[in-house]
Amino acid sequence: MRLEAHHLDFRYPKTDKWILKDVSLTVGAGERLALVGPSGSGKSTLSALLSGCLAADAGTVLWDGKPLPVKGYCPVQLIRQHPELSVNPRRKMGKILCESWTPDKALLEKMGIEERWMTRWPAELSGGELQRFCIARVLGPRTKFLICDEISTMLDVITQAQIWRLILDVTVQNGLGLIVVTHNPALAKRVCDRAIDLTDINAARP
Amino acid sequence: MDNESKPVVLSVEDVGVSFRMYAKGLRRTALPVIRSLGLDVCAGEILAVIGSSGSGKSLLAHAILGILPGNAEVSGTIKYNGKTLTSALQKQYRGSEIVLIPQAVDWLDPLMRVGKQVIGTKGSKEEMQRAFARFGLSPETERLYPVQLSGGMARRILISAAIVGEPKLIIADEPTPGLSVDLAKETFLYFRELADRGAGVLLITHDVDLALHFADRIAVLYAGTTMEIAPTRDFLSGADALRHPYSKALFDALPQNGFRPLAGSQPYAGDLPRGCMFAARCGMRTDACFADVPMRSLRGGEVRCIHAT
Image (tube, rainbow over all chains, first blue to last red; front, side):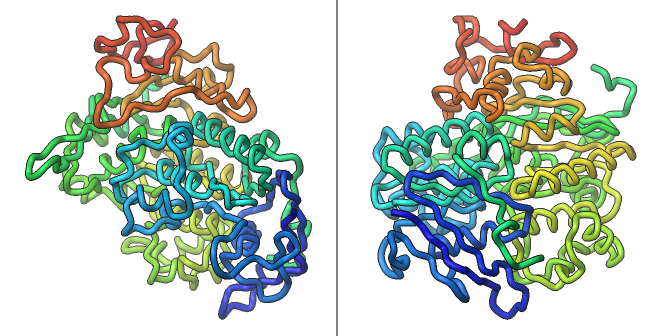
C-alpha cells in the first residue's frame, strides 16, 4: 500500500498565485519521509491535500490505488501545526480525544496525558498539552498513514523525544507510512529515512 | 552575575500565579501554577527561558503584561526599570515599551487585514513596510486576511506587529515555530540587534539549539518554578557543565544528543509536591529533596538543587 500524489495543482480560492504546480510524490507504507522547504513554500498545503482536508484543483491523490474516501474515516490522517485551531473549542477534551477511537490508558500515560485534563475545555490547556490530544486521537487502528505537519515545535525537548519515540513505535507496530514536515534538520535525520525538498518537486515559484 | 553593571529592565521576584476555580458546589479553591519564580533581564541582554510544556512560561509572559484572565491571582513583585508594575503601569507600557509576541497564531484578528493589524494603534505605514521588508514578507501580504497566510507568514506578522515602534522590553513567547531555520535565525538576529541597542529581551522558546546561539543567559523552568539560571556557554559545553539534573535531561533529549526521553511526567499544578518539583523523576533524589529547596549560586549561575555540584 502506498500514498501517491499525481501532478497536483493548487491555489487558494480567489487568488491567481499557484501554491503547488505539478507536484508528484509517492510514499510507501512503512516508509518515513521528511518534507522540508522554506516557510510559505506550500508544505502545509501539500499536507492538507494529501490527507484529503483540501481538494486539489488538478491532479489526484491515491491511497492503495484508490482516491481518498470522501465519507467516513480517512486512512490518511493529518496532525496540524496549530493544535488550538484543530480542536472544537466547544467540546471538552475527553470528547475530543475519543473522536475517532478510544485510546487505552497505557497510551495516554506514555503520551503524558493526565486523567484530569479530560474535563477541561481546550482553552484551559497549553499548546503542548493540546497537541498531545491531537496526536493521540489519530493513532487508532484505522489510521494507515500519518502526516505530521510541524507537530512538535510547541513541545519541550524531553516531551518531543517522548512523543516521537511513541509515534515511531506505533508506526512500526501498525505498519504506518509517515510524512514529517519539519524545520529541524536534526529531528528529520533522527526520525526519517529520506528527505524531499518541496521546492525541488514544485513547479510553482513564489 | 556578569551583568551587574547593566541596569535591570525587568525583575521578577518570587512570583506566584494561581487560578481561582470552583470545586464542588460554590466552594472555591486556588490552583497554583507558578511558584516562587525569580529571574531578571538586563538592558542589552537576551534571557532565554526554556523548560517543559505547561511549566508556566506563557503565564509568566502574560503576568508581566497583566493580561491574565480575571480569575488569576499574582503574588510577588514584578519590576520594570525598578518600578513595581501595577495594573495602571502595565496598561500604560504594554504595546509601546513592553511588547509581546504571542505564541498562538489565533491572536490575529481573523476579520482584519494583516497590514492594519501590524500598524495597530501606534505604528505607521512606513514602519510596517520596513518590518515586512525585514522579514521577507512581500508588500501584497498587507492586504491579506489571517486565514490566507501560511504558518510561517502568520508568525512573521506577529513579530512585525510587536516590533513596530521602539520597544524597551520584548517578551517573545515562542516566536519561531513554523519558521525555516534561516528565518528563525533572522528573527533571533533581530532580537540581538534590539538588545544591542539597549532593549531587554525575554525569549521563551523550545528551540534550545538556536537560543544557544543568540541568548546571553538561559533560565530553565520546570513545573512553574526556576530550576537553573546559567550563562549560555555552559549549555554549549555540554551536560557536565550544567548544574540541575533537569537541565542535563533537557540537554540529553535533543535530537542531536541522544534523543533520550525521561520517564514520568511533570507534577500537575493541583498537587505540586513539597520541596523539589523534579524529585520524583530525579536519579539523585534523597530524603532532603522533599524539604524546601532554595535557589543558590553555583559556578557563576543559580540552581535550585541541593545535590548540584
